[in-house]
Length: 109
Image (cartoon, rainbow, N blue to C red; front, side, top):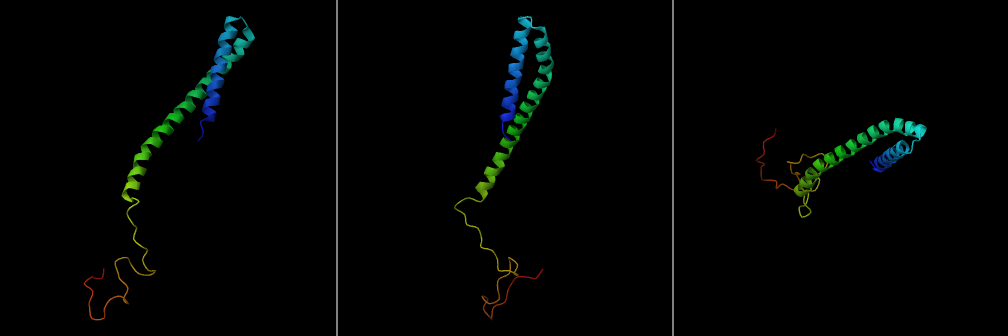
């Protein structure tokens, strides 16, 4: 998720606070009333978005070490095994490559 709503709403909240503070000092009663009534919902919404952003940051940093450990297990130098022939289990070898006289020591499950 982008941080644009958080930045926009925080800027709007700070601007509303500055307008409210100025209008109180300059005796603009109607403007002070309007900006004072909009300030609490803006502040709550800003704090909520800030809390969500911090929670996402913590969750992302908690997931990163697991992803790095997964990359270490399947490192670039290691080669993966080729896929088995269709229809054969991984443990079983094809019968055409086994010599005719040798018996398999594997037990059937």
